Image (cartoon, rainbow, N blue to C red; front, side, top):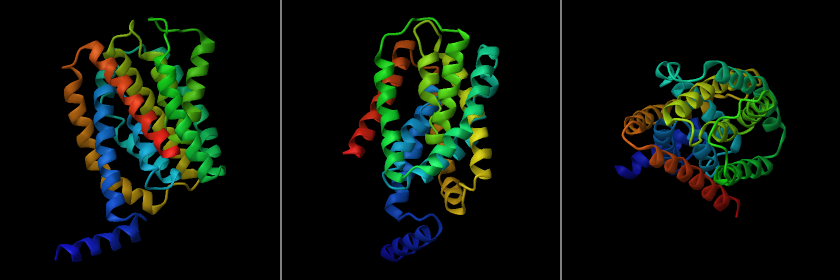
Amino acid sequence: MINAANDWANIWLNAHIGLSLLSFSIVCFIVFGAAFFRGLTGFGYAILAVPLVSLVAPPVTAVVMAILMQLVIGPFGIRPAVKVINIPMVAKIAALSCLFTPAGLWMLDIVSTDIARLVITTIAIGSFLAFMMKRPPQLNEAPLHILLVGSMSGLLNGFAAMPGPPVILHFVRKGVPPIVARGSMITIFFAAATMATVIAFWRGMIDGEVLILSALACPLMIGGNHLGAKFFGSVSEPIWRGFVILLLGVAAGFALFKLF
C-alpha cells in the first residue's frame, strides 16, 4: 500500500512539477528552513533557497519559485516596518531595485544552466565574505552609494531572486537597530519581488510547473516565516547579528559544495 502510494506520488509529481517525490520533499524542507530564517532576520529566503533548490531543480525554476514565494510572504511584516524605517531612503533603494530587475531577468534568460549555477554560487560566497569585512557602524546615505545598492539589488533580484546581498551590507550594521534593518529589508524585498514577478510573467518564465510547485510549498513558507518571526523579538542584538553571519555562511558553504 505504501509503495503504491509512493509510486502514485512520484508519477503525479513528475507529471505536474517535473520532480520526484524525494526531490519535492527536499524542496519542501529547504523552503521551510529558509522561510524560518527570513522570519527571524528579515532576509535570507532566496540566499538559502535558490542555491539549495538548484541542487534538485533547474536554476530558472529555483529562481522563479523564489520570486513567487517572496511575493507571497512579502506583505508579512510590512505594516510594523513602515513605523520604524527611513521611508525616503528605503523608497529610493526599492525603486532602483525594481528599475534594474528586468536587466537581471534578461541575463538569466540568455545564459546557460551551468553559468547560471556558477554565478549564483559566486553570489552566495561573495555575500558571506563581504559581510565579514569591517564596515562603519552608521549608514552611508550618499546618493552614489544608494544608487549602487539599489542597482545591484535589482540585477541580483532578476538574475538569482537574491536582492539581499547589497541591501544586507547596507543595513546590517552595529549602528542600526535590528528592528530598523529587518523592516527596511522586508519592505525592499517585497517591492523587488513584485517587480520580478511582473517581468518574469511578461517574459513567459512562469509556467504551470513552477506555479504548482510554489502552491504546494506555500503553506510551509508561511509556517516557517511565522515561526521565525516569533523568535525575532526574543533574541538580543549580538545574537541576531550572529544569525545573519550564520545564514550567509551556510548559504556560501552549500553553494561551494554544489560547485565541486
